[in-house]
Structure formats: structure tokens, C-alpha cells
Length: 265
Ligand code: CIR
Image (tube, rainbow, N blue to C red; front, side):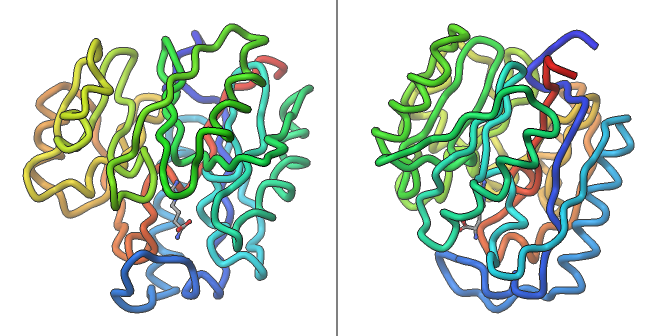
């Protein structure tokens, strides 16, 4: 398969544990329903698998309520996997647990050592660069360390700003193809996607921005019909997954997997 920033041979997911109901949230809208969370997670996994990718399903981690959101623990590039340094104290330990898993796929696994912090959810890898949003979880020192680690492979890391009150940069955007980003208007208005083609989420459907392009599919949360129609009209093959329970914990489609095509395989 030709490498593209949206074609993947593998994904890693982690089963939600019963403790997921204690996950972090910006606003408490009630505890997630564990059974519904599990059912939506199973649908998500079956969609990833339907594209032909190998999906590794890790066991739940009882001591880490947010560990179902595996994206934040690592960045997976074709050449290297890098364990992140999550900015929430309760999540810091998730990266060290993910690193040995990634060693099963990569010859080289590096780590952000600190003192800075960086969450995978703040990182958007496109064909031409790596955009990283500063946020409440990701700081300039974390971004600088990522820049230093990836310079060996000539990656260009660009620091941008996650909108105030938005958890992660990718809460508000997703890569659709080599030149197209699905984004909220509040994020595209910052100019960070100048030079890309952008598709804005429909008004009132900002929560649809956290979707994933995974091989031939665009996997998005259900309940955002106008944005789904826009994407279908633009030629994407859209699949919807219930996300009501993960959304109570500020999580969505990208957070639930690490997606990658390692060169070493
Ligand atoms: C957290 O606050 O860390 C989790 N409740 C949600 C993480 C969502 N992850 C992501 O956007 N990449």
C-alpha cells in the first residue's frame, strides 16, 4: 500500500474498563453508561477491521479510567513510535504502558522525557507536516521535544493553538485526505489550515469535527446529519458510530485508537 497519512495497516485500541465512568471530563453531564460504551466501542473496532487493517485489542487498565483513549499515549509515524507525556496527572502513566506494546511493531520506540507535556490528541499529522496544538495538556516544551525527536526524519513540526475551552487540537479537526481537513469554523478562522482545503462542520455540529479518515472510510460520531451529508457530498465514504458515552468524557473517534503503518513491518 502506498503510504498516505490516512492509510493504515494497523490500529491499537484498548477495551474500556468499568472504571471508565470515572474518567476525566470538563463538564459533568452524568456518568457514561458502561454497557453502551462497550457496544459503541465494539462497533468502532468492527469498522476499523472492515478496512482490512489489523486491530490489536488491549485489555482494560483498571487503574487508568481514561486509558480507553489510547491516542493520547503515543504518536505513531512510519519510521518511529514516540510515547507521549500526557498532561493530565492521572494519565501520565499510560505512555510507559503503551511503549512496550509499540515495540512489537516498531524497531525504534522513543519517549518524550519532559519536562514538557504533550498529548497525542493535540497532534495532526498531514502529508506535509506535523501540526501540534498547544492546549491545557500540551505545552511549548513538549512540542519542542517532539520537534527535536522527529528532526532525524526531516519532519516539520508546526506549533499552533488549540481554541480556548477545547480539550485537544483534534477535538476540533480531522484529516480527510492529503489536502483536506474537516474542522470547526472557530479553528479554521485562526488560519492554521491556510494552504489546505477545509470542510467546516455544520453550524451546531462542532462535535462532528473529531472524526477519522481510516483507509477508505471516514468514521464519525452519529447525530450530526448535516456534516455527514457534507462529507458524503464531497465524495467520502462515511460510517457513523454512537459516541454519546465517550462524549461525556470529552472523547471521540480519534481518541479511541492509535493508527499506523510502520515501515519496519
Ligand atoms: C481526558 O480528559 O483525557 C479524557 N477524558 C478524554 C481524552 C480524549 N482524547 C483525545 O481527544 N485524544
